[in-house]
Length: 124
Length: 222
Image 1 (cartoon, rainbow over the protein chains, first blue to last red):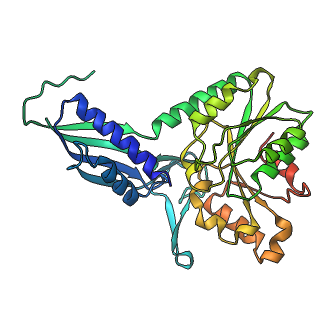
Image 2 (image 1 turned 30 degrees about the horizontal axis):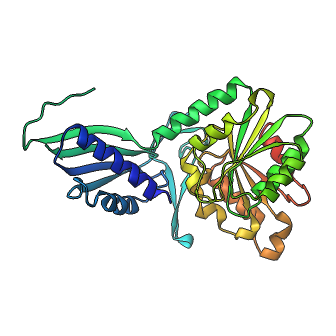
Image 3 (image 1 turned 180 degrees about the horizontal axis):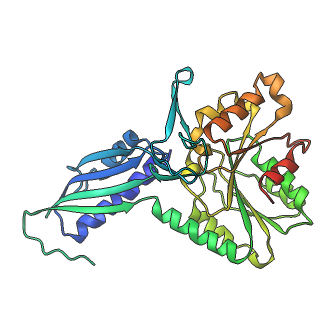
């Protein structure tokens, strides 16, 4: 729900970086968004594109890599995917915040909550 | 600083790793340090609009006044009527809402904390904005997070918003007296919450009568 605000921040960071390097154009912006963040990548892409309009970043190609969650169980040491249940009744996926091996909820979410600007390609 | 000597027409590929959520997390950590230095336990109360966050806080303040010095950061679209209700129970209330934000963030909470008489306080309730999505992304520096839902929101409140329970220590199912009228199974809501997060504490309340409020206090180890 806060995609617009995040996208404006992304724009600010990208344009500042471009300015620092004396760039003429921003050619590409690579983002990473975790599945467990509360962000919809499609909306982020739309708003970033919109915020880039009439700036040197307007030709930039935006790519978003969606990061799958990775958890670590503090009890049995399991490292891997989060168990997600398919609930056809609700047309939704239900993430289970417990260890798929020992069912403990003492889990550390190692990946999947990020919102990163991973790389920027500039024409100088 | 990284200085690059650039030539005309050159293309730069910069690895950045700039995290957009990290600033909030940093501020949340510094809020926590301030709270810990003053020995204050902070509880972030999240929940949908109308689920009963204010009523629950009012009841908890009522039950705990005398035992602790309490403050409330009212971040939901709390009216002065609500704030007055809580003040009447004996807590300091600070309003931080403008009526526009969809969540509190660590920055707003930092400013609110700065206005509180920290030396005098033991307990702080932070009422988040009524929303089951955005607040989940923004830790505030609280020690515990609870989610308030109520049966009047329908039977699917938990399964529709599983991510909000990711960091929650307890879920409060409120308005239990209305479950029959609403045709909503409290047991099913409880099963859903425990399925998503087996360690979550589930407490059932009626914040109008105060039923179950002491169990919330117990579940939070206050």
